Image 1 (spheres, rainbow, N blue to C red):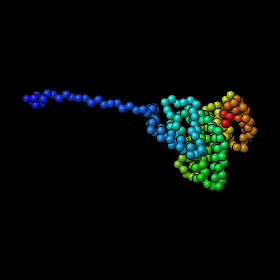
Image 2 (image 1 turned 45 degrees about the horizontal axis):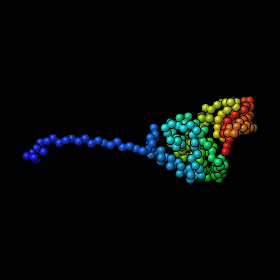
Image 3 (image 1 turned 180 degrees about the vertical axis):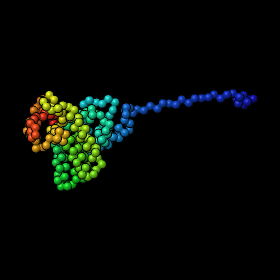
Image 4 (image 1 turned 90 degrees about the vertical axis):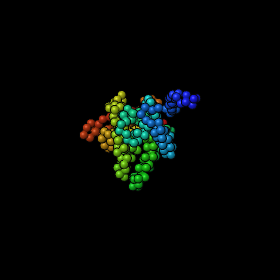
Length: 242
């Protein structure tokens, strides 16, 4: 009887409550956390191998996102990057002590390899310098020319990078007066912009005068000799190198 009674009683239905798994990982709005971490490790290790530390410091943080994915996207030639983001990467770069001499030496070594027709070696050295400073105009230009010569698949990426950086400089002023000076990070960047973007022949570049504005800023007064047009002056504003 007891067995029959037990058989007649309806079994209680139990509902399993699924426990919500919580993650301690920080959330990013558009970038997967694992991708971010892998990119940061890859970039950091490459820079350490090539004589540098984390070279990019953005003055105004982009809310909700890690910095390193922007550097990785710029290196990949991601055409969805906004101009303001590229502008932040370019002007946010803070030179480390000794970085200027390192990059100048790298330029000399690249040019020496080119003179010896060691184009593949020159390209690798230019790329090594770009791990130290991914926004370096002269090395991007050399890497672009060498990639074109070697039929390397990154040629279009370097071309896109230099065009985007020139667009950033163009958006900062017209260079007609000290108040509307074009903003660059170095005199080398100013001269490359003048020749490559404004189509000023090298032989028309005249006297250059550096005017110190304060402890951090200086002005380049560049005279441009006239041929078909009158001689003119262009002004570039740039930080004082460390």
